[in-house]
Amino acid sequence: MELPTYTSTLANGIRLVIQEVPGPPVLAVVVQYGVGFRNEPEGRSGFAHLFEHMMFQGSAHVPPEGHFSLVQAAGGTVNGNTYQDHTEYHQIIPASALDRILFMEADRMRSLEITDTKLRTQIDVVKEEIRSNVLNRPYGGFPWTVLPKALYSKWSNSHNGYGDLDDMAASTVADCADFFDRYYTPANAVISLCGSIDPSQAEDAVQRYFGDIPYRATAAPQDLTEPPPMQPCVIAREDRLAPKAATAFGYRLPKAQTELTDYAAHMVLSTLLTDGHSGLLKNRIEDVSSGCGLFGPLKCAGPDTALIVATHDEDRRDETAATIESTLTRVADGDVDHQSVEVAVDRAGSALYRSMDSLLSRASSAGCGELLFGDPRIMAALAGCLARVDSRAVADAARRMAEQPTAAVHLTCS
Image (tube, rainbow, N blue to C red; front, side):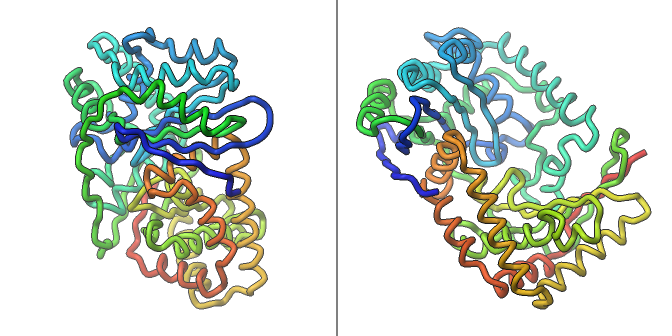
């Protein structure tokens, strides 16, 4: 998993991560900014995602939507994603198109053009996306849009990052300009390149296009830390489109920056509980899944969340909750054979390696590691931690989860 990784920092604060992968002349180019759902001002839920859309609406030398058409004309693909603590813009391109992509990325970093007409158009686009993906879809946005509210008290940690329609409609050009000025700064950005490329040539190209962008101060980081919850919190939600009821349980994860080994143990526990046909919960609950991170491991700097999600008949909700609780207690008590844990370790490691099996995933993970944890090699470190997880570590992870007050969302269907 660990590739030769080259890092450098430009005078304006932009961090560069380069991974050379011999092979066809194809590159992943990823630009990530240290801003996400948690940086949204209160009363502007969904603004980080809305602003992701605005980043494609033109700059001094690139027309609105031109980023898409110019990447596609070069034979590449392009998209963006918004997470709790960062926003990502990524491209897969022929190596010959690198200069074009770097020019466009630099142009919008220095000269994004924001108008009320563009903003109103993108508000309508994002509203329709929310209607399509959340409001008018069975289990839409479940559980990630609602579960944090059961687990956290600070607005930054707990609100719906996809967005509220009224909050979206209230957004202004001034909001956008302020957000760009505070967070879309060179010093808050990481550029990651992965593929068939000479690192020194890549560094020269990045310097050529980004080096003259002036340094700007980034907004001070928020204090997102919270004390552990002391009381249970169960939230009820209705989904008239869902064919069955569902329950999502949330748990605080160890802090990856300082407790990566414990974090890895929770990943193995998740695999032990719900992976394949042999998962401990799979044998007792028909439709159940689990994971570390709302969007996957190490996708946010913390606080981070483990989750268990089950769909079930409405009259089996209490039984489902009791099954999950008793299974966690069983693992915490060491009532699981060592061979099952060893299999879970192997499966968790294999899943992590598979998730890194593309140029894009490698570039994205390296950049995210540098941006959020100060370590572009953190995924390789996580893989090493996974390989060393033993039965005692898994039992400790289960105990940590079992001892937390219930934080859950009950979804009912009509």
